[in-house]
Picture 1: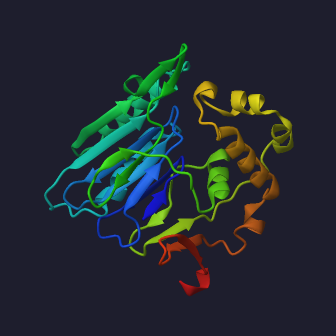
Picture 2: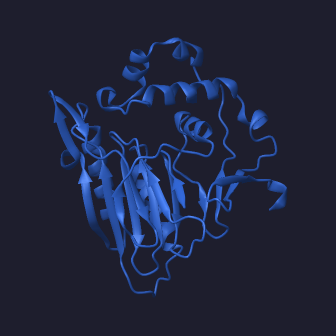
Amino acid sequence: GLLYVQQREFAVTTPKDGSVSILGSDDATTCHIVVLRHTGSGATCLTHCDGSDTEAEVSLIMSSVKSFSNSSACGRLEVHLVGGFNDDRQLSQKLTNQLLRAFDLQPEDVHLVTFCVTELNDREEQDIHFPIIYGIAVNVKTAEIFPATFPEKGPDEDLRSAHVLTGAPLTNIYDAKTEQLRIGPYFWGPFPHVDFWLEQDDAQILQNLSTSPLAEPPHFVSHIRSTLTFLKEHPFPSQSLFPDRKPRIYKKNEEGLWEQVCSDKI
């Protein structure tokens, strides 16, 4: 019942969903994971914010949750913010402030229920700071939120990461009405200096392509290499990945795993 949400993606669903009961994301260092839920409808959104355009992102997730909630229904909007730590560049603190401000600017009341960010999510080891919690999940049916890690971040992990690395805006990946995961169509041009980056050693990649090199999980560099290799193989996704300009669509099969659906069946 898991739907994994990558950086700069969001997904929203309700307790009526027969395919997805858990929304989750991890690998947040300076990023924050946001859960917004309407207690009346149970509509729940999870997103992984990196500070690229926080105000617009908060407006987007607010409208996505409200679209599942009847305005006359009782209940309230509750938000949970988790992630970040005391990083050298204070990127976490900046994102915390942006998120609080963006929710405060909303015309509706939003109740802050969980606040586990920046200095409240910080641990120190030999003078190096790390987040305590890197990932969370929310059970859409029970509203329980818990720390989580995800060995499986698919489907289309490299494609979705490539979309972020090429500067994409926050993207909705799930259609709760049809219970389908929809990836793309995404378009980008050749990634600048991709061969140069792929020739660099791990230390260089970590130092230059991470917001917090000392606090990254151990698989960070292999994940970046895999994404860069994907970008090298697909300089023009309009030709190689999305020639018909239709999304790649997945549904849960009987084993509960994502299975690609042919777009001509839709």
